[in-house]
Structures are given as C-alpha cells and as structure tokens.
Length: 90
Image (tube, rainbow, N blue to C red; front, side, top):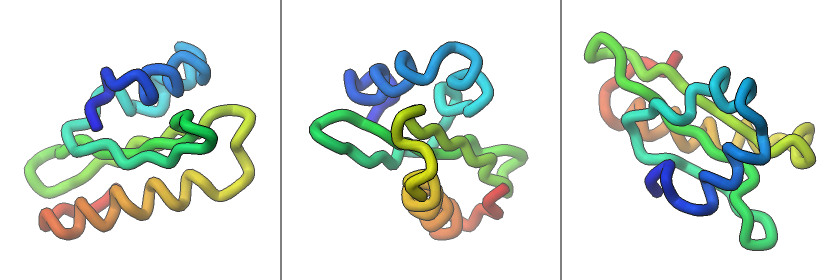
C-alpha cells in the first residue's frame, strides 16, 4: 500500500510531525505492511534499501494503540520481506 493511501496518511497525521519524521516511514522503498483496527491503520512498517545489502526498518504505531505489540507484528512482516529480498534487516 503506498504511503499516500488515506489510511497511512491518517496514521502519519495522528502520530505528529516529530514521531512521523523519526519513524522514517515516509522514506521507505519497500511495500508498507500495516494493521487496521476498525477500518483505520493503527500500525505500519517498511524499510529503505541501503547500500544494496541492508534494509533500514521503519515502524510507527498510533499513539493510543502503543503497548499492544503491534509494532512487532508489522516489523516482523517487513523483516520477512527484507530477508526474502536477500537484505540484512537493521
């Protein structure tokens, strides 16, 4: 799902500019892996390929949904995708 998708854009907006920037989610080159709750994207992850061998992970969870291990779920999907692509997740 592209970052410009309404669901992901809503997650980025809900998280605020500082957290969105720190997450790095806007700069991913991989597909985005996400979870929805009640139709809203509440967690997303992906990675940016770096130096042709490393996948720099980015993860973001909506503030009200933190502490529920959602980051682990979406990050695991991104890591599996990176490994399948022959990249070292970081």
